[in-house]
Image 1: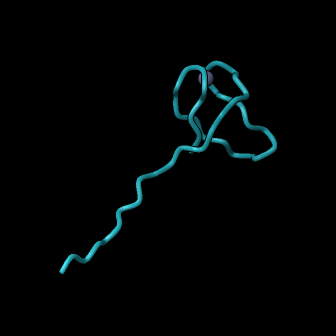
Image 2: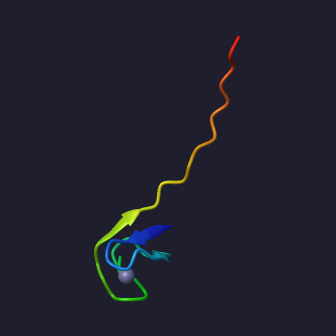
Image 3: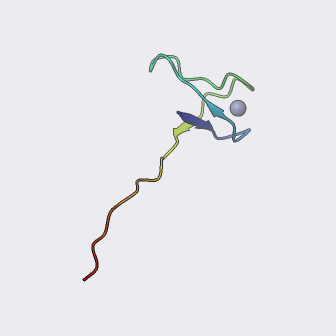
Length: 43
Ligand SMILES: [Zn+2]
């Protein structure tokens, strides 16, 4: 999943060579970081 740098909408990029926002056509996308749930053991 990628997030457009202009309209801030999440867009799916099927092909890595064709990274473009499907809403506004902006080509500046960045990967959406998914929060990783870490298990921390606190003793
Ligand atoms: Zn966009």
